[in-house]
Image (cartoon, rainbow, N blue to C red; front, side, top):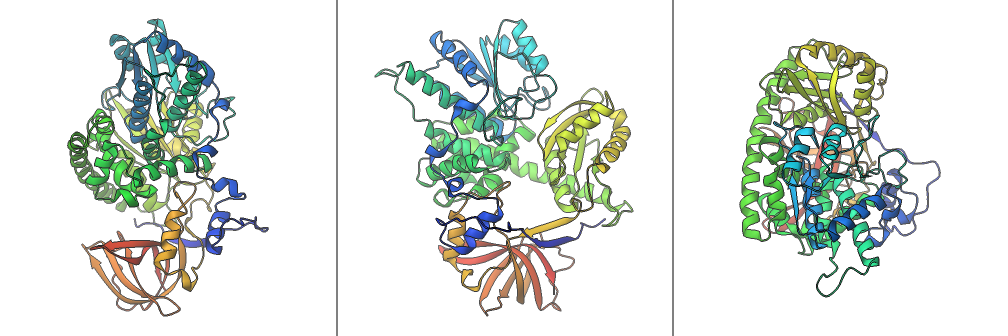
Amino acid sequence: MSAVNRFIQRRALPGVLPSLAGVQHPVLQRLYISRGITDMRELERGAAALLPFNSLKGIDAAVELLVQALSEQQHLVIVGDFDADGATSTAVLLSGLKALGFKYVEYLVPNRFEYGYGLTPPMAELAVAQGAELIITVDNGISAVDGVALAKKAGVKVLITDHHLAGNKLPDADAIVNPNQPGCSFASKALAGVGVAFYLLLALRAALRERQYFSATQSEPNLAELLDLVALGTVADVVPLDSNNRILVHQGLMRIRSGKCRPGIQALIDVANRNAQKLTASDFGFALAPRLNAAGRLDDMSLGISCLLAPELGLARQYAAELDSLNVERRAIEQSMQAEAQAFLSQLSFDGKELPECLCLYRHDWHQGVIGILAGRIKEQFHRPTIVFAQGDDGELKGSARSINGLHIRDLLEEISTQYPGLIKKFGGHAMAAGLTISAERLDTFKLALSLTAKKHLTAEQLTAVVYTDGELPADCFELDFARLLQQAGPWGQAFPEPVFDGEFSLISQKMLSDKHLKMVLQTASGKLVDAIWFNADNKAWPDVNVQKVQLAYQLDINEFRDKQNLQLIVRHMLAC
């Protein structure tokens, strides 16, 4: 079964174009308008334009809990998550609380293979056993009904900070801060877990300032020093980069580029062979986050958190080297699993027009920590919502789901759970990604329920793989200066995608590198020669010496080699003309 065909389609523009007088370049104006920008204020990237914390439901109760905990110097235990958002959330909150004067702060991160996700009862027991007087969750907790109940029964208070969607029942915590909980009027629902943790610190600092807490012996911390962590976690969790998140990411990038980066992130940048002065949001997602996530996928995210919290660069580099080794191991496991998945899919009789609405795969020996990546790869290849299962404990299967635009995967799982009671033991997540647990013996039943439920929501249009572009690029834009302008116009990311252009080019030369990357020299309609590369191209179809003209969907990139920069096109899709 081959990958689905993809179609190039230009992004729609509104009939009446808003005025963005402050944006000088006409192409940049078009890019912003096609991404829903209607007011110059939405492009503000200064920290002063961040949404105020006051409208976060539960923030006052959370602050009071922390003020009391500070006055009594209570023992705090932060319960994090085993992904990059959870790791950065943990590092942000622990660093911020200590800077504000808390003396007894520890963290726990569940090992996904032993405890599962979030504040489960076993994790709550562990926190209680460590003497916690206040448990604070980061990037989890909104569904931890049983874990919170256990902690409260033991006399321990619980403060939940999370950003995931709430279920039918909220835990009986002492305070909940989550922009996605019912009744919260905070304007941005796109905060990552690390963003929520950062906002909690902002609110606590403001309250302490009002109470004249800061003095010569307890200085007021500059919480902006945490923004490199906030930026990394926000991009890594693939939350929409709305105007508020773009400010957080931009501010974090500015700190890193100006040399104000913490040792742990600098070490990750170094081991990924990136340049801190030229770091972009995509570097967070494709270079730093995978190395950080490798700890949670294969080992223990405490290694990643230790790297982020390292006080000096030498120690941070030791941790980063370990993370890099784990990432190499993760890639090898992933490639093996992907080959097995491809072999299985090739045995199916579906062609590109007969693909099922959802793909659901399982092998008993697949690695539980890598199934999310595999699901994402298959989803991208076949443009179908994909769920991949691996063996769990006690006759259970652990699943990871990835979806396409138009299908909210967490809501789909909730619908299945409602219509088929008991079929799904646990689930949670976002619109585009979710996790779940089922009994191994009920896999076939789940596949049937998944297919029947998905059919009700997916249209033929949604199942058509489309490469959206921003149209043709004027001839005078094939220059380094314009490529730099695009880089500086971000940060680009989820729901605010990097610009992709389309057009026809003459194919001057082509060669395959490492049997998977197609290197080309192209000629524009105006006669300009440009380099181009298509990563992970179809090596069965290319190079093709008979093709002289191609239609491309591409991005502008700046390639650096031996201190020399030149314009390069990154090909996203290519068709012979």
